[in-house]
Length: 384
Image 1 (cartoon, rainbow, N blue to C red):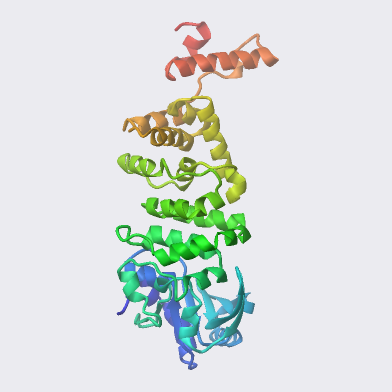
Image 2 (image 1 turned 180 degrees about the vertical axis):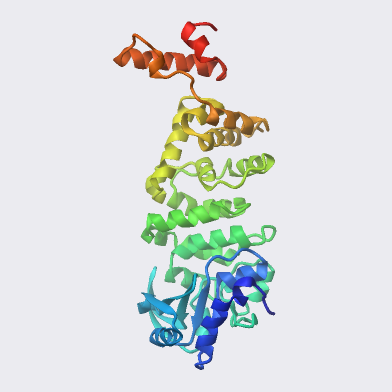
């Protein structure tokens, strides 16, 4: 099989592989870029695997006038910059010892050694400059069948890097056959290695959850996470009970997948601490809970906290109750988010300090109760 892609035909890509192969080394694009090209999906990162040692890569790039940065040279990775393009170039490796996310590696000239240390068969696919696929571990049939399998022994692959537990569910959500279900051997190995999740940083867990929740239909993956104990381990108190109804509502309203709204419907204790949310994301979680506790309408929540919170409130509440939502809710939330209270402090003569603040809140409440319709003149005059 052969791939054709703009990124592969690009002069920078061809120059990089050509610089290595003309010196007698093997060089291939590998992993996600090859997998996604075969699936006609978007490609973001371009990774290259080569039989050249890191110091050889740097010397060759220097002779070609290309800049190289030793971003992970102890593990064989050099970042090569050609024009506006950046490539992660890593020497063929094989694991000697592994310690969770750390490993002692040895360089190799055998592409099969390099393939064996990867996570899933569908990620152990290589492509040369001509686009021809090299498949050392027979991963191509798995990819075409949307069959997600760990390479060789699932338990061993997980013990090499416990983040692969979360990657397994993320990749299934994006690339797995939802009708065939998940691999029983993989699920058994995951269940046996739950303690390894405790060794992962909250930032890495949060990053994986974000990617998983952005999949179009991650319901089956999340249910399997719950059944194996993974979900409760990384997000205590979370449940998938209302997740599928939320996805249905998003599709019904033609809304894009929103990973944070999907996280809110899962629930759980201490989301910010559990996943190391950014300050902006943590603020949105806090605003949603405040709007929910105050029993605000989605329109008023959008006015108070913004459009996202208004939609979060409408959809998460409906999903939790198992009810539909009025399609007009999006327009109502937009109206609330765009509403501007017409009265300012300068309009209230004779009021100061606490009395001024109380009066402004009183008038704002009256304006909100009117559905944002009362004018400044009506509010100041007391007319209904």
